[in-house]
Image (cartoon, rainbow, N blue to C red; front, side, top):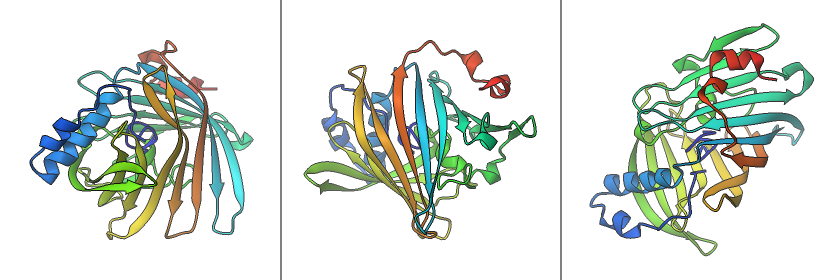
Length: 269
């Protein structure tokens, strides 16, 4: 989840400083309609970012507490009305992974497309739908988490209102429509003030609690877009965790569609 619900929501909903439409949310008649309304509002507030660039540090921790680090760059391009966003992740360190790149095309009406470039093999590999629940580069984030997450890819159900540390949240359950998803459901805590996802719990195909994603250090960019400085994914079944720390985030930097194609993977440095 690096775009919208994954690393943007997946993880951390993009939010703009717009008028809060709580009356609209409150008018939703059923838990399903209310849950959908919350996610649609969070998605609406993220509209208009055009493109984004940031640096990112990935910290992997095993169950014994040993850590390893990887540095990468992340680029994003906003999709149009008919399709989802595009994301490109490029690894700079460690040396044996330098140049490894993942390109994701999120879609609103079909499965997302993902391609992984492996410089050691000098080839681009398309990630099969059945493989997207697997770990991304040895981390606790799956390819599915890193990929895009459009509102249309899930069904929703509002569970309850909840207050945590003085902050009011909507608690909403979402159900992936993708039959190859590694999850049966995701429970998200979305703040009522700005519609940012602070926490998400992921349940595996056996309906067991698999992972928890926490987003912290939210900052407001361009007086409109909220981004967390840190995402932490904890795997409760293995005891491992992965932290993603972002820095130097900028928007509207002039990226274009030609920066997000399979040829761009090979020239990503």
